[in-house]
Length: 233
Image (cartoon, rainbow, N blue to C red):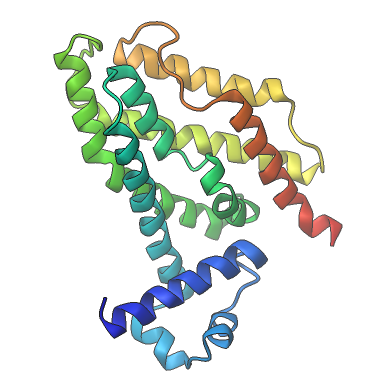
């Protein structure tokens, strides 16, 4: 890695750590520079703004998630298990993404938060589109899936994206009341999207399994704690 690339990556790593620790809104460009002992000129040489840096992090995390997912797919032959693994890798509701998503949660119901959410979604969709097309094609060729239309990867990813957004919205609403939503409400969202995906893919009933329920609840707890932190401070 070239020296300039190393500095840029160091800046990204420090920013990501501070965003997850303090929150995106509470972290300034100067905070990042203080840790790096760098100048503002150095920051703006690589990034036009703090928002541009965060957008780069969106793509980095999406690419990292796909890389981890592809390693798991290399060891799996079952068509539906491969597809479920890919959908799981796409979702920011995994344990590995909880801190990062938690950093975004307090902003999601604000105008700037909605814009950031769309940037995150764009990074995930762009990164996972080709692998999703590949896995759906395999499913159709093997007869496991009987889709009415061949090119439905964008719709699948759109549904998955709306799934995590709906969960986030429910948790944000609970955060305002200082009360975690009922497990049944979270499960209802998950089941709604599971059924929608099965119908869209014409997959066997119960074959779509996006995320283990225990992990689902664990991540929800972690995100709720993050939302309630400002109220406890």
